[in-house]
Length: 289
Length: 271
Image (cartoon, rainbow over all chains, first blue to last red; front, side):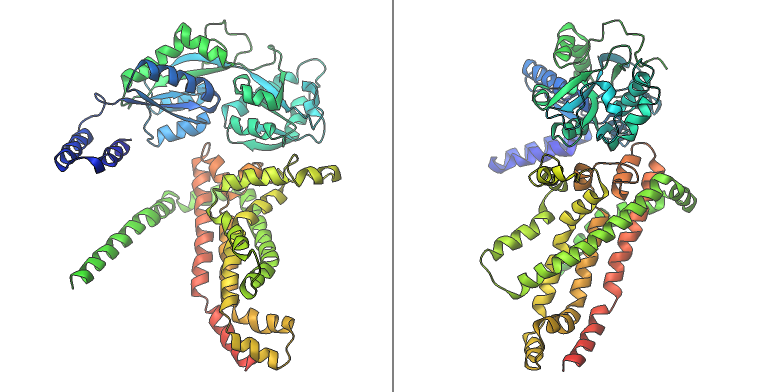
């Protein structure tokens, strides 16, 4: 990121007089040698792919309130982000779709101890609007020969999906081997949840399981949702934390505070996520541990 | 004088730069993996299945490319026709296209709702998420390497050998098999090997078009990517194997005097 700054500074150089060039460059160089925290005006947020739409809007709002602040996002599977942070990627905030990858980051001493659950998400099954596999209810996912796409097991959404399938197998009318039958239909373990959405949107998969928040207006035109009853659903709790090596810890804390505020929670809810303040249901996947 | 000094300096910088950029990551991969770790990793089903699948699909791909690509390469090398430039550009396109774009294109063409896929669907044929889709994706991205090399090789065969064959009443087919092929063998083999290496490393088009399922569509590059998120040892082991295989292909290409021998033999035969 530092290199980027200097690159950008040098990019401006062409039109300037030589004296100013020297000034700019030396300024950039002092910026290089000094800790950047004080003058850093950009904030880098690593967030689970399922937060893409909500965080993008939150970023726009905060940027408009704080002139000069620039928020950059890196959206990917939480496991991917945890790995990137571990390998030294420069980030200020890490928002994971499950506790597991946040604990990994905490155990390695990468995030501050102040980890907060800030939002929750639930799963839905999706079917392309053309409904090529004739899937009309959840039970149909176990029909032989369907093409089902899930997130890979390492991806939080993939783990939750398998957990929900196991729970559904205990529901009346599904059959105890329901989860096995559904998993036998899986034709691809996608590397993040958005890839599952894309395969269903394109009509290549007969069905998939994704987060409710993935069903944006654009997606809703291409897929139909099958709700998973609350008792069998898996509620994902998303933890967020400021990184220990954050270069802009102040903005990072402000970003987290915004998400926890009433306004932030309402924004998250608009994007299909569940408020953090609702009582955690008995079926919730725990952040305890 | 001063220029020679500058050339040398630039040369040194270039060599150092390339060495650090390319050789260092490769070396790091090798150093990171002690042999026992490598062997344990090889025994894992994820790793073993990925290697098997990669070898089978990339070999199928190479055969398909040679069989389908050779006639096209011959056409491009020997004949002029309207729209030739366009055909050549289309052939080269996959080399510069991001593989993910190739994957999306393949989905939109051969997917169930795709242009051709929707025609195939009533016949009960669905390509995405199958091993065949892996071969298609690899063929798409790897074909240009062979076709370009083969066309160049065929074009270089000297006219007088072809004329000589013709005066001896060699049919075009005879001339192609007994004169052109042996004389351009080196380019053909080199092109096929480049295609094979490219197919072996294919990632973006495969995961987009064929998906990722262990034992069916999860080739080595996909397994590396997935393993990277859960099992670093397996990921590094797979990377090292990919590296060794690719390096072997490339070294073999440079050290076999294949073309030379064939060339002298062919010369003797045609004279």
